[in-house]
Image (cartoon, rainbow, N blue to C red; front, side, top):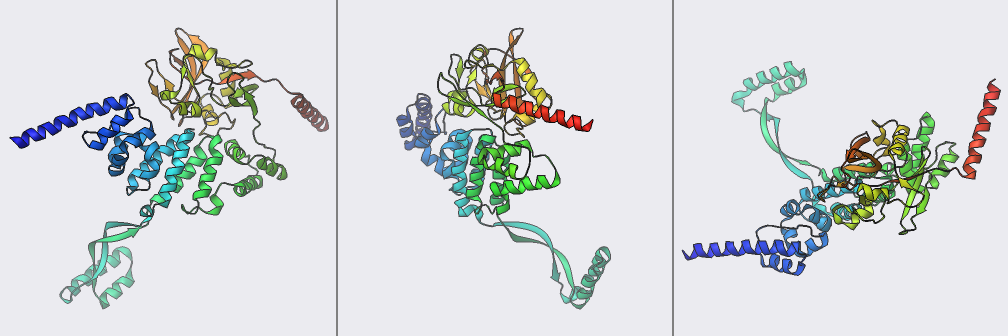
Length: 475
């Protein structure tokens, strides 16, 4: 009876402590939460909205002893706060999951994820345990010597084998020394697949990440080339660009815009110098810079189809705008999210919220709405260097969702009691025109009509004169 009461009391203490733990974490009382975890009187790992750093402060020993459970219960905190240490541990599966999540988030444009991915990958490739060959049990057929009593039977089986396979040499050797095929389970040693998997993942990240991260991922490949057994000819650098440009020059094919812009982001002006030397007409995209006088935020601006587009999401703070998950890091990576009324007044003087007509012009230039996303999204070919990022949205209940998957941009248009927006997804090719409740918070791209400079007008006039001269010669 005493044992039963003792167990019941211990269970009650754990239940109450678990409630206290949840309350402490929800209240941001890190010191109390840490004491409860240290005492061991809690039933489950709970992170709530803890930052990764605070979660590690509270659960460091738990994360170390139970990485699988920790990843399941507190995925965001574990991956971002403990990912590099997890990849220094014994669980290859946990490390692979950590790297997969961080790579996914980095490819969506999250620079914080890139930093965490870089640290975790460094730990992973230095972990000798992940490079050890893997031993597996395999069922197979082996030739085994027959005893003398079964010699004739085995020779008959060899003859049947020779008839079915045409292996007459095996039959002759079998007559001299009778053998038979026997099912066996053997242990085979295979090289670890971890290194190959991470190499493939890193290259995929380089080619599908936003152009702005191209140089960072190129450096990451260079740093890890030896550890991941990457051939020198595959490392993206200027030597690679030279071979790439010469190949397209030789076969007369156009330079893929998305690839060109990726190289330009890392190695401009060297890329333009190379293209000029090879007499290739294509050039790196020309960006203007705009500094918002209201907060000194700087944006890249690019002329696309007659309009000057900010090719970054707006970050200006207004009423009825906020960061995804109320996390400033998301504002830095993806810009702020605005209600439609806030979006109408958010763009700086000289720019306006991209209109319905602006989007029609843009998508027509990109091949029509059914295919335009491929050329506009940051992980597509991004031929216009528009670099649409997947910042998700916040619904009317204040819930943030679809970051890393969906990009949503307000226009000024209303239809009925709903606003009109454009959306695209990380794996689709179309840009959709959708209606959304105006209280939802979406991304904003600002735009202005392009006014030609004197240099541009002179270049256009020279081009027209050259065309007229050519037409005259043809006549």
